[in-house]
Figure 1: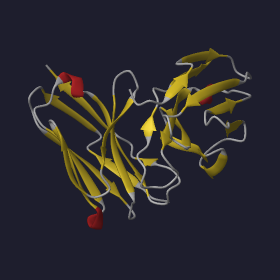
Figure 2: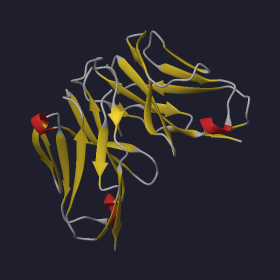
Figure 3: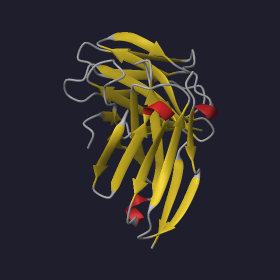
Length: 108
Length: 114
């Protein structure tokens, strides 16, 4: 099946810093979503981005489907950005395969 | 709020017991997916139902079963519980069953098996 890798596994930032999270996948995909899991465990949809670039406030994402990777950019990070960021991909329309996540800690 | 409702939020039970987790999808969504998040296995797909029928199975144990009812809510039944079943169980829904649909996740049910 499809494999999903994320890097870095852990990231510690000072408030106000920028960061880039990466997701690599082993096969072509029809669906890619980025999620933020907050400290309470809730999975929050950030982007649906099987290809192209999208922006939502301080967050943006780019997926280069032909090269099988996606990037999530967080600018001017805030303590509320802390948590785990997952990318998930779906290529057969059956289910998501999640990456292992990037744990982000934003320090005040 | 994703519009997907999961109950209960927390469940504490003993080994050997059976529990039922419930999921109500977003209004109009026909697909329901179940996922398990454990510390050692990460987020893993369990099963997918579309309009009442099983569409795909993932790493779901034989002790676990699910169904989707005519009103489209779904239940995940876990039986003969073991300590290793302690995890966060998520339900997600999407408009249809295809890969092009966005999946929206509920808040999860945290199961603790003692």
